[in-house]
Length: 356
Ligand SMILES: [Zn+2]
Image 1 (tube, rainbow, N blue to C red):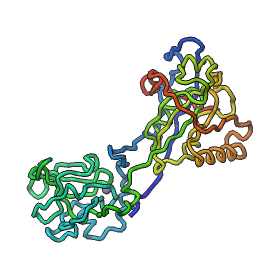
Image 2: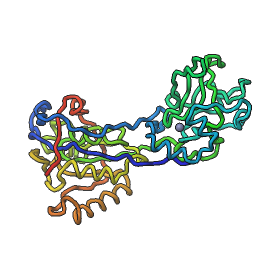
Image 3: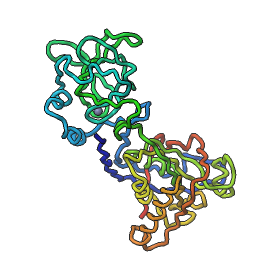
Image 4: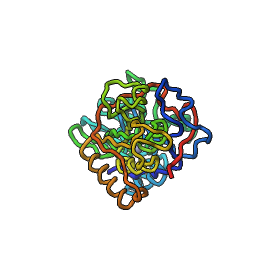
């Protein structure tokens, strides 16, 4: 059962532009941008990752229904409508194999065999989840009892209940329906939805990094964006070094993203919305080499995609009437910018503007 990799719709309504000139002398971040307009509505970054690296962003109702299509009536009754299977009837009660118990509906790893114990209740019992963030709890007062229901954190599948009468070290008993689980024996491959996310890195320079960082960071699937310097001659450049033009660095943004949520091509498309790639060493009113349009691919695949994207854009895209000046250079070392540059728009407000 593979997880449905529905790509989140990217609704970019916010705009980017570098307003105000770069500095030759000591920086004064407060006056670098024009912050006259409030931020426009943007899609918020709702991608959540657990400590074990799994994407635990709650599925939408439509995604849950898609996963639920192959459930049997008995499974649907338990998983979707908080039912309970008959005691001692589940196929995993007496399972003694070593491995991982995953969510029947979305494949998220939930429990491991090394926390399973014989409770004598007739249901698979565990003293802890494989990752505390993979199992959520909810008060349950149905059937005249006060209990704590446990659910899959990603798809809200009903798993069972947790009770305070388990063995050490937690003293808890996670009592789970067999039908809410699938089992992956050690050595077997996990289905896609059971694997931790493999985050990738991308780098873009498109004028002042404040706006580039701000808009990328809000994209679904982008887990982090950091402002910095790249592509110059000196090690550990300061903002002053970069603004002097002597160091040759571009203001760039390091982006971590989950390719199962957002593709590199979608990042490229976003990059070409938020800046003007035809202005050479300039972005709007910001002049200087640090404001050049540049893509720093991290591998051959990104290089191929970036090159092809620019070719297509030049032939048939928004910028086809002017030569695109975007440089594409295999990613050199990235130097994180000074702390006051990080999350600048988030800290100080302000807005950016899509170039004409
Ligand atoms: Zn699930």
